[in-house]
Length: 475
Image 1: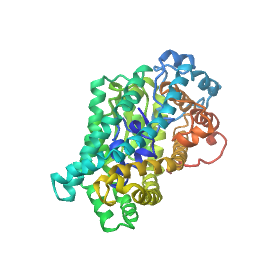
Image 2: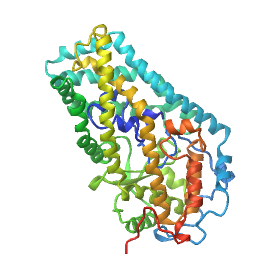
Image 3: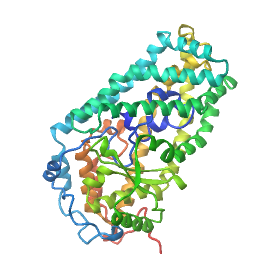
Image 4: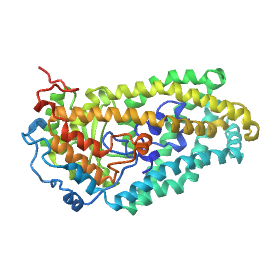
């Protein structure tokens, strides 16, 4: 999957996620069938290494002894040997080749998306689609819905070769995908349908264009203010409305593991009733887990691949990490961060649009910003601005992921299991454990694996008489 398909946690998928203005870039940002994670280690790190590779890395087999109830650590939970060396050894030449292609695809994907937008504008195709939309109805809602449908279809066709290579061919080439072409294509089409329904049928884009017409100088400010309720609503409905379109979720089937997770959640002071497994093994051999939603829609989700490939104590540490996101308020912090960032994002977008409209508006046959033919121009501007702010979003996300790593260690004391789980993630998902500094700053939404392993090896304040940083046991 590309960054567009898998989602860079707080960059393009979220920044262009739930509000009308940001989702003007929607045809190139369809929701992904596999949720963005809160455990994966790199923006496009997907890939398995076989069990033999894990054995070569010195990782315990899947049937190793379970952890004690509620994730309480045994006395030897602190890693007793050098896992850093094992991480480096598990980064095979094949993994390196995969990572190199993924990194290049991030650049190619962005340039290709920009090229498609420029083609639609300079060829006059956007203006012709506008004429078709206007012929279908005089009301703004109809015009926007028709244009969005046409634009989504044309953009999808034009980007299909790159989407096929990055989302299907490359994954199969490296043995990472279990999905047939038909199933992959169905997910792609579902993604386009979700975009049209949630932006066109639900009149988010029509409302955004109304704001652009009524407030031509300050539309960006009005829409930025609206992002807070929009992001909140999107976060609430995503687990129960959007995710089930792509995946089948069931309550965790392993009753004993479920009891241990619920006990761990009680220890962490958070609701533990919504723990699900999802059938990702029908698509991939990669590992992942995540937390999303809030209130009644809040849930912790484990991919079934992680249930098959990790030991019980490793799974409990992963659950401690995910519970950290909930206990530390990362979902609400993320909503606030995105809402605040949208002011900068949309202000910059407005400046780019004003220049582009004055310079090329007549050539593109765009009458005004609120002309629906401007949609590719808006998408193009948002893509450019998102690339500029992506390092800031990645830095924010790395910080919250490190906090969740620390919380998971504090609530479980399973340092050895944490180190092993990170190694499995790195090997199974073919991520680069030691990326260059510039790649880390530009692309990585999670700390590199080698940093996470070192943290697991060195952080154990409970053995040194020091207080925890984040987890506070209830008295």
